[in-house]
Length: 285
Ligand code: SAM
Image (cartoon, rainbow, N blue to C red; front, side):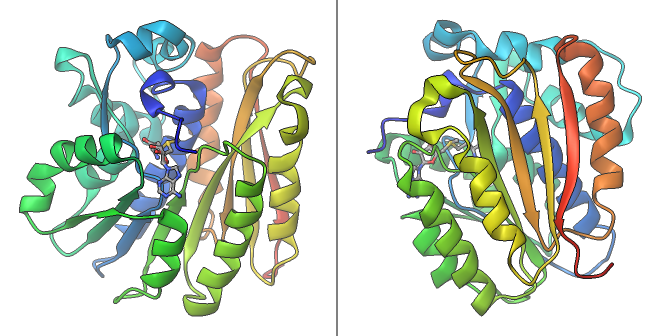
């Protein structure tokens, strides 16, 4: 289908939880000197402009990242995240997940980003050119789910995966489940982050599909952690009232990095906002 373009949604509340989780995971990997591999299966354009026609048309960033403009963050993870954003903010640029990860890589680490939309892929190549020239970032014009399985396990097998599909059809949820299972067969140590929307009844048959997908992950023989951020009440016509990240094989105590950052973010997202943390499976307990 490929009608989704992230430029309309860049900087919304979903980006905040997704990118905070991604930064936390990468920071945790960097606590050891050993190299790691990152995969971003649905990369998007890499960089967006918050004064673009697309961004201004929906204005989604205004109730998201714009609320964190000029704040003095107290939490270390939130500080890291906002520091990365501010390094792009001249000219109203805003980094997507590929640039956020590229920014955090060390010389010994690598990032594979995959994108299937031709226009978004061209933009991705352009936005990552400096990092590609350094040899650490690799752009793949291919289906990200098939690509992840094909490239698993990487060498070294220390690393993490961000799966951030547009979920344009309900079948995408099942495709993600199948991919996670296939990936884990080849790469059991993979730390997988699957983003999903929380949708009200207005979304029709996709209502509850994200939660159902997470419960399927919870039946795997892996640790599974779910972190969600809701920004409004789930009324029938609320649309996307929040979103979540489901971690399969989460890094040890990664939630202790993320929760304080989300707690602080709530102060700026409005009185109806809240977050939750839930272990769907904890094989270590
Ligand atoms: N991860 C990005 C970020 O956080 O900045 C945003 C990605 S956006 C939500 C989803 C992207 O996936 C779109 O650019 C879309 O073109 C792309 N896409 C859709 N289906 C795909 C597929 N099967 N493989 C790779 N990319 C796909």
